[in-house]
Length: 372
Image (cartoon, rainbow, N blue to C red; front, side):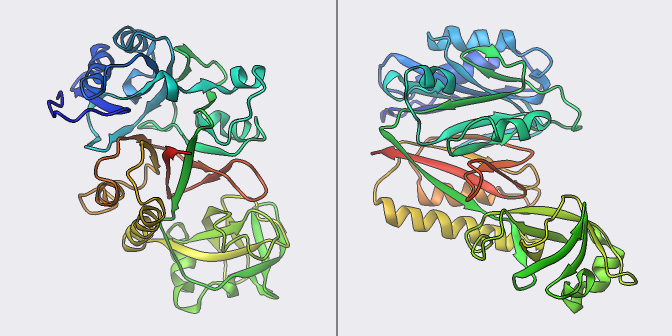
């Protein structure tokens, strides 16, 4: 899988995979990336391993470090992985992105000791530590929550070649790189924006002056009552009227919807004064959203980016898009020569309006990097 193209890159990706989680996949992924690059001193490596490595990724990390000639290995394990060339599902292996010294990732704690305030922090977290992770810094954040096949872990995250015992990492690229953030939702809006008047814990009681159930569009009320899990509720991050329009919201599953007492129970805890809209997952709307966002960014940049990070939700990908990863297809169409790395996660982290780190669901989040 070595790229023998005569064109060399400043940043490059590589992958290696097979039926078994072998440590040499990490080494081969780094070597395959290096084969595409200009001769340079490696400053850091982003290494993502499939979830089968999570029990003991240390040897694979060491193999990547030896191949790169640096201990600065950052990453985590996840159920499925991807680069700009392919996605890795139902196999075991590794993907790596190699950076020269001038673009190297560094741990946030190191940057803070140097009195450097990064513009954007890359946050990788397990589901167990996600709330702690997004509240661990006042810097804007982008990243993802790790995933595995059964949702029970173990979850492994590493920084500077060492496993993070608290299950999250915070790192950043140099400030002379500019990150352009792309957020594409995977839902279709079914209602206008409504205000929550009364709620209690997970239960919506009154919305826009009516019983919460009555705020659900009439044409889907029967579906909500009989199959509530198919319906989603987007609740604004704060009480500002423009919060939903700006995309600052969290998606909650509908647990139950009772037409008799008018109450709707959500997976999250909505607060009175905030706004909501009802939604459902929709592949066509998801594809339209990512394509629109990427084409708009392409027109803004007017040049090929240096590299990109991609964090689609594990509920997206080929199964959601009927056999193709349309997120990746749209990226390739917009930026065909840009290296990309990422994984399918259990939640996506983006900058919020009120919070510097906001956890999303069912979206795809990308950070596309250019020189300042």
